[in-house]
Length: 374
Image (cartoon, rainbow, N blue to C red; front, side):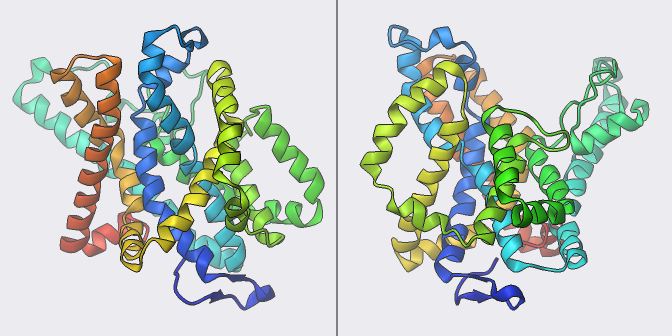
């Protein structure tokens, strides 16, 4: 959504303020970078055992700065992406067919093209390897010629079929693409969600709250997808300014809540409350990003156009390449994990962004196609 002057929309006198538009724009690229950090967080494996989370455990103490940063910041990006998408969609209020036409270009085409490019690349690499040194080629994973319809479906959309014994592709080739898959599904059923928000706000709100806090996964999308997409619709329908709400909360008050909640979350592996707090923190920080200086905001706005590209390119191969190089040279320890967490995440963000800038400059049509016209 463009920023600048207030965005005034004709239908139903809906509008998005200049401040809201600018603050959303200021967050997108930063949120994409935080997604990279989330996927590079080795402490997630350590967290799975609550017995490790004691201050008498030196490994826990060594990982503590990483825990705190990851919980406060990296849990917010995907929920906020869903919320912003729904909020802007609702405010724009396009006709349903116009909406679908736009989203086929901005969401569905990248959803299909990125896995297709990677699969085609894997085919070329494997054929080259078979031709050059056939004895060293692994045949443990079925080649494309052996894939069933379900294998192909999972390669693009990532659904898991537990009854299928030969299933080797439980996730899409582009692992974070569950987000745009779920977003496209929600857009398809958005008229139903909109009607529920308008006609049965309390009943539907209780339903959404229940599946969120009890971690009930809906049949066709992830829990956070439906919850935060619906939240965006609620905020738009009832003109709730989530940025102003976040601004009213004092940092000291937030800190008092965060510390006990974070420890409870880590001990019980229940992240629902801390996700909301993490979202509040990022919404509050957006005011600083916008007000810092015109030059700073202009920089964030420039990189906003590369946020989806970074989101798409960082997994699986870019992040895996740099982490494998790191751990092949440096032994694993809590201290090296800390530096790997920040260092490799920064390297991946910078590398992915540079690739996007170069591709946009030399092949703008290709970049526009795989970046959804952004």
